Length: 342
Ligand SMILES: *Cc1c(COP(=O)(O)O)cnc(C)c1O
Image 1 (cartoon, protein in one colour):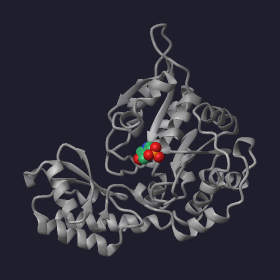
Image 2 (cartoon, helix red, strand yellow; image 1 turned 90 degrees about the vertical axis):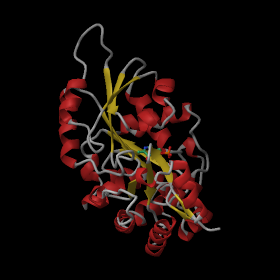
Image 3 (tube, protein in one colour; image 1 turned 90 degrees about the horizontal axis):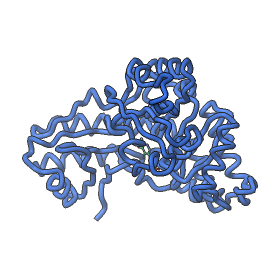
Image 4 (spheres, protein in one colour; image 1 turned 135 degrees about the horizontal axis):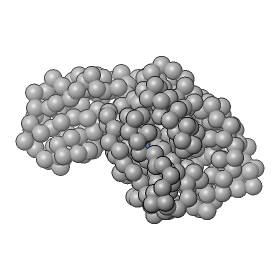
């Protein structure tokens, strides 16, 4: 059975062009800095993200955690949004690896209120931890792919700089935010010190993320990546599709956003489902299924039997994600099928 797979944009497979690029990639030993394809990817990523330097890392989680490790010392406090990926979904790595304490703050639609950030930054007191880092997330996954406004990021960065606290951006889906806003991604990254972006989500590369920042930050991050066992050898084989991801796969995210609108509109016409179409800003749709009387598991297993995959997100909330391998026709089929089931 072939499924219409709305579980995540991580399921996207490399394109034919990416596979060819892998086959013919020029490679060397990246731990010696000698892999020309990795070097090309890192230079390209730094340029696009408007930072001095960039580092290829194995995953978004590794990129975020290398950032925490590089910015902080054990005992520091990291200010982040209460439903952020770093707080919810990285296995407590910040505490386990960096020895930091997290300070979750409830945001609105994924965005931290700059005044709340200001209040959370610690003053001088012998009892307090140091405020080591502020983390933002854009787009915000748990909030349903919400775009954090440029103005909010700008205000938080101004406060952070005044207090000398660095800002890291978990931009796993930052290109979705940039495409939704119709701005170059550097317009967003100018308001943070460091950023992590995933190549392996909507951009369709098979593996990897980029961590970008100042040259001195990346030099230290490279050492942390090595300590974590993330120093790779002929990594050009997996960097080659990353270059295609950055050169050719960003603009097409608009199609995923259009399909997300279509899916949201379709699902919202089904009486037992609640979808706030106006809240779908990128490629993530949150669907409230409580009125179906079904549990998440029951609902998802009925969908699976009919060839549709999605994931549970919260009590009575199912997440659908659109991506390159979900076509317009598949969205229509999915809506008709789900309507039929209910
Ligand atoms: C997917 C994701 C990550 C982690 O990426 P992995 O490559 O799966 O480790 C980090 N942050 C956000 C917001 C994500 O959606």
